Amino acid sequence: MRQEQSKPRRQFKSFNNFNKPFKKKEFKKFPKDEGLKVTVRGDKPEDLMKAMKRFKRIVKESGILQEYKDKQYFQKPSEKKRLRKKQGIQRWKRERQKIFNERGY
Image (tube, rainbow, N blue to C red; front, side):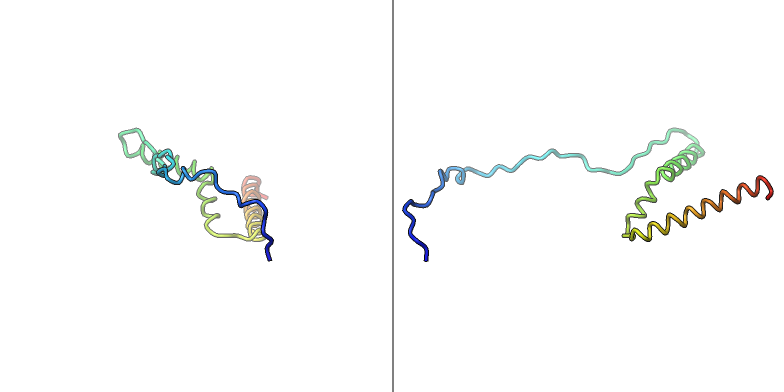
């Protein structure tokens, strides 16, 4: 059983805050992201094709798309290691084939 305490329980200091209307916190409204915007200058259709090729090359070299594709699903670390090793072997074979074609042996 609980023993009776000599001093009374502590009361809240004031309830004035509960009567005031609640103010909602204001957040900054940022514009929505609409994606990547590319502007191509030029009148001829060839200019557009050149720009597309250049854009594709830049994206491919940066590895953005490959990284996105890789992160779509989970790969075990051992699977990543196996793929890196396989890619290294393919790269080495390509280099050896290039040397073979240049030298002839």
